[in-house]
Amino acid sequence: MSLPSITPPPLTTSFTAKPTQPPIRQIPGSHGWPILGPLSDRLDYFWFQKPESFFRTRMEKYKSTVFRTNIPPTFPFFTSVNPNVIALLDCKAFSHLLDMDLVDKKDVLVGDFVPSVEFTGNIRVGVYRDVSDPQHSKSKQFSMQILKESSSIWVPELVSNLDIFLDQIEATLSTTSSASYMFPLQQFLFKFLFKVLAKADTSLDPKIAESGYSMLNKWLALQLLPTISIGKVQPLEELFLHSFSYPFSLVKGDYNNLYNFIQQHGKEVVKCGKEFGLSEDEAIHNLLFILGFNSYGGFSIFLPRLINTIASDSTGLQEKLREEAREKAGSTLGFDSLKNLELINSVVYETLRMNPPVPLQFGRARKDFQLTSNDSLFNIKKGELLCGYQKLVMRDPAVFDEPESFKPDRFTKEKGAELLNYLYWSNGPQSGSPSVANKQCAGKDIVTFTSALIVAHLLRRYDSIKGDGSSITLLTKAK
Ligand code: HEM
Image 1: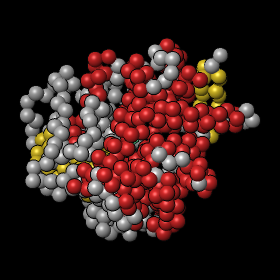
Image 2: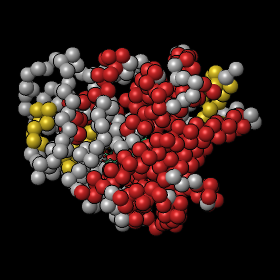
Image 3: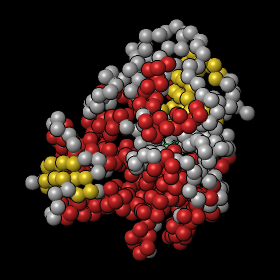
Image 4: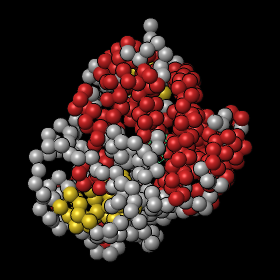
């Protein structure tokens, strides 16, 4: 069957000076001895090197942006997981992951390891499904429809819930010198996202209002722990968090509470899922995943990084952003404000480039094909697992000038607009569009829009903000 495809965006000659066909090269690197190779790579990945330098040192060692390696989880209790991957670390190589003719996206959201389906009600939600699977199309359409229907309340709900969050931080700062904001931010995101995406008011259920966000945190952690580092003391993290999966039973009660809440209070949105051919059960589990994993999980990672960019600035960027937020966003913030906020948008994009919230993307070769990197051609065999590490991909010097530097205005003007073709945080170019024929994030535009609006709102409300990725130390109200 011929599948719909996205053609990888062409690299223009201004970015690459290699117009001729590059030479064919054997893929360097190796998966090592059984058990020992994967185990040694796992220890490097989580402990001795950490992901960025894990990929960087191998890229330098093999003098190649494409090489073989292993990605955890692995030995001893993940015996059914094959950790062998081919890493892709430049824009040209990475773009093959976006070509649905070449890669199969079934069950590769976090690599060869697949969290138990029990975490999603014993069904596979759309995010884990390939574009050739009719269930993917149903759930993708559902997600796009939810977003469409939320547009009329998105901005007022965002602003009013953001104000509640900021009032809370101000109150804390009135008694202490530093307000840690992660949990208040997550409470804000939880309430806001349930309201706009599920049309459900979390205050209707005291248990959900009080601890719904921590229920989601536990549910997310149990699924992802084998694949992420949480910075605990080693070797404890390796022994207790990366050696086996924790069972769904530990979070079953919480997940059922969230499920029941959506079933009772999110009826209108669940009905919409049924219109796309999902059963009620499938609609609720897909909605919970979109809400809890994609939206709440994604923003919980990204917003602290964005706040850090603004609040820890000492270069005068905050003043420039404040000026733009006050002079160009109009009297009331809304979707229309966005097009005038060139610098704010660029800062959001640059933060996503430097620190993509979902750094790893996977795809399994559907067939044998030749993969082109910036300087070589490689033969890929059907069934091999390709692994793009966006954090280095989006620092490709063939595309981005001074790739390791944070340049706030990088994405402004004509050249900035062209660079959006290589901003891949959403599993597709920022210039692309999510559809049933691809696996690009359905929330791609609303994520950048919401982030830009949060920056604009913060800088209209305050003359000065100081802090970092976890605490706020100063909020000076606008005079
Ligand atoms: C900062 C927030 C977000 C980040 C960082 C993010 C990132 C991503 C990424 C990287 C993927 C592709 C995963 C893969 O297949 O490899 C994805 C998929 C997806 N995202 Fe987002 N996302 C965010 C917010 C949202 C929101 C608000 C929605 C709301 C509808 C959403 C809905 C989806 C859906 C439905 C998919 C699956 C697409 C498909 O299966 O075709 N995401 N997201």
